[in-house]
Image 1 (spheres, rainbow, N blue to C red):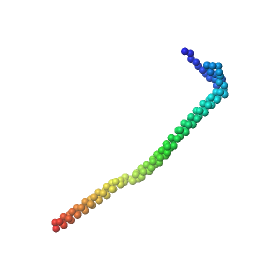
Image 2 (tube, rainbow, N blue to C red):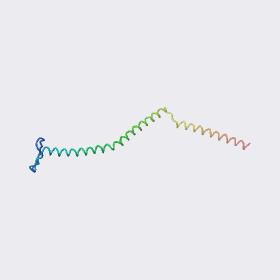
Image 3 (cartoon, rainbow, N blue to C red):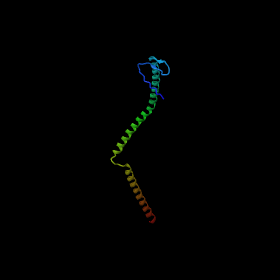
Image 4 (cartoon, helix red, strand yellow):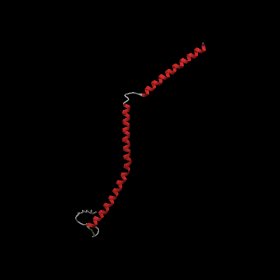
Length: 118
């Protein structure tokens, strides 16, 4: 098998190894220009296609930043309570009310028992 090696010199006209026809500098420029235009059109189309999905991503990033700020603010508010636990106070108040109600029931029972025996 013979290996054919072709090297191109940009200053020399491009020649076909099969035939005797050679491409002129103008023809080559025209062909390269056409290919360049097609490629530029495809690249521009891809760029615009990539920009459209970026808008929702930008919106999502902005919402995430706003949510992060709100979470940080709430965290600071919670830490500002200095260990105060509202649930404990509510439970203690409920326990006191239950004890008062229980005492009131005992008093009422003893009064009713005194009325029935007396």
